[in-house]
Image (cartoon, rainbow, N blue to C red; front, side, top):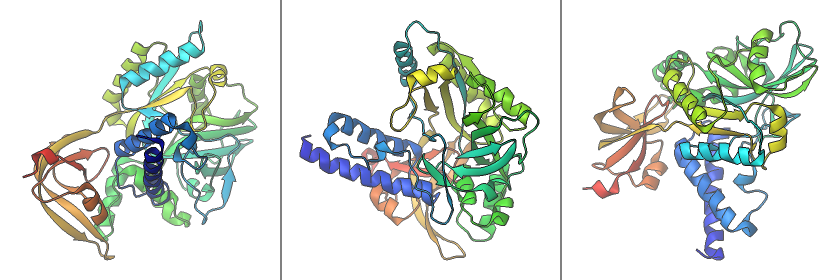
Length: 395
């Protein structure tokens, strides 16, 4: 591929990624899986690395993602809320740890392995123990002011318990618990409304309401996993944050591990995979973070993400089955949703006979036809999604 061809294809990839960013961050209605998005994003990263003169400031690789909605007031983060690099490969986790040990030779580098909650990233600012404001990640520098909505979440303390730092910014994930998600979708089905694809979308959609009375009816929870700006407290290790959160009354992770080798990191990732099904919220991976804050400072950041952390995503189960028919589901509001009627197949412990096709554009884009053998994926989805067609098996 020459530079002219690369420029054209890079432009196409950027347009595709921006479209999916808008669907994910603005409308809480993604039409592709995380894995498909990550593939597009990695393809763009690799091409920009090969043709660095084609990198532009407005490229999706140079941003965190998500423009704040204009309906909300906006809040500037005191410290950027960057997203994490992620991988589905254990080899890349090994490379991550080897890379940071090369950057900090002759130092022992313990890391924390903790659940990656499949929710909505939020930042809460407490001053003298009182909740001052709450914001979404937004573009990483400026987010939406969702203070009134966050205050409706019962597990969020509006006043921290004794000994709170003067300034204490905490970061976490707002989520819709599994049982609450099933109940909400049951109510939406009865009302003829489109179902939420997964709890993450439901949580994101809930926090976008301008009326906090509506948000208060949603069974939202929150898990705090880190800090931003702090005044009046000495926190030197990330592992010290979990007991501090508990002391102050902030809900946080119960399951996490310290590791100081590739083998121990991978062992912790596998242990988490065995227990995460018992959590009340959905998880889609593990986050690996350098424990010592001074080592984090030494490792620093890229434009988009910290060098001292990475997310490992568990692969969603994918299976092949036959597409028997395409049916159109009509909601009471008149919204048309194409649904795939499938030859029943076992996916993630349950028998599946239908899957969402999202919309007509997706059917055309993926060239889905009745009689095809299709790959379906279930990753926290109430209705599995058709990921692709196995064209080699097309009749």
